[in-house]
Amino acid sequence: MKRAFTLIELLVVIAIIAILAAILFPVFAQARAKARQTSCVSNARQVGMSVVMYAQDYDEGMPIFHAYNTQPPANVAGHLGVEVALFPYVKAVAVFRCPDDNGGPVPAESPSNVEYGGCSDIPGKGRSYWECYGSSYRFTRCTFSTVAGVSVQNNIVETRNAVVTLAQFVEPANTRIMRDEMLPWFAPPFDRDGSKYEYFPYYYKQWHAQGGTIIFADGHAKFLVAGGQFDETLCDPEATKKFSVSGWSCD
Image (cartoon, rainbow, N blue to C red):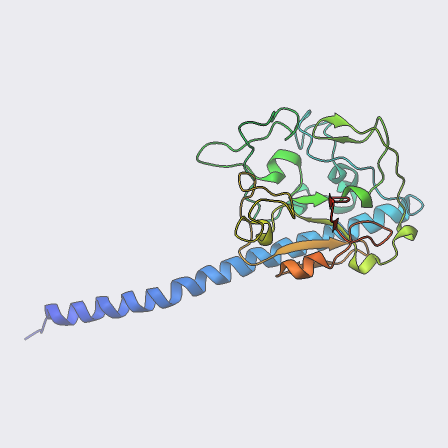
């Protein structure tokens, strides 16, 4: 005679499965997050090395600065972005994408067609920085060559000249040339009014949960996990700290 499971036995099995799921699901989520983090850093390293190779091919000159341009859009002929100049060294536009790139909201009161490059979130979906501007990584303006009448940011032509070469970097291993656009310590709980990092509450959107990817002038990339680490990085060839009492100096 075959014996069937009793209701109590079934409930015990279900309870055990539920407990195992509660234990394992966070582990799986952490593993996926770690994998995305690793992929982001790997892509960043390729981008960093592409900058070094570009500079070596152009008498140590850094690429011409372009950022946040959508006229024409990313990945369309004529688009202006540092990633366009670096593409021959990486051969894949996906290298400029961080898997945790969740984009960022554009304030409704701001002229998104100019100031924010005309690239706001798609309701209910969002839009990554990579999709909007061609790169998840913010280019540090002071570490690239800015050419008046040629460099364009937010679809607005730059008016200053500043040629930058690799030889100018005092501390290349600690000077960031690119970084994830959104870093956890930019969030309102850490910088409530945006007075330190200028990522105001209506502008910030979380990417990585515990840190962010930074690309340095010597070509290496690193995942930093604390705002204090980030504050110790430099943002211009002359080794000036990232911000001063008067605010941002060169990002």
